[in-house]
Image (cartoon, rainbow, N blue to C red):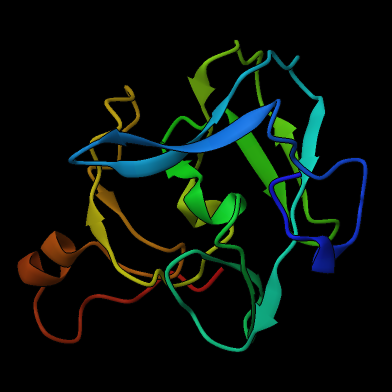
Length: 158
């Protein structure tokens, strides 16, 4: 298991034989790679970690005031505007959005779970629908702020 024993022995926890956190490149840093294939719709793992009240690097939002701090697995999912996984923050499960081949990195859309990111950054995913900048779902792209007149820009509060 990638998780320490303190989190238990859930059979859906990621195993070293199936996943690893590896260095991808200088721009991206580390990410989760899968050593096996998964079919679209398959639950590929359950997440674990410490529940904390604040946004940190490697946290995923559970509620507006609680976050899963997971420096073992899910905290290293990479971002893509065309992700191959989806996270359910109620059941703490990870599901394949499409078929995933062995030796692929796992990509989520950070705006799926996060209202506000620990840190915004330029997107380099290369997807046809790339938004160009990675933000939480309630954040505004910095270029939009620069282009707007004072008082005209409102954040989306879904």
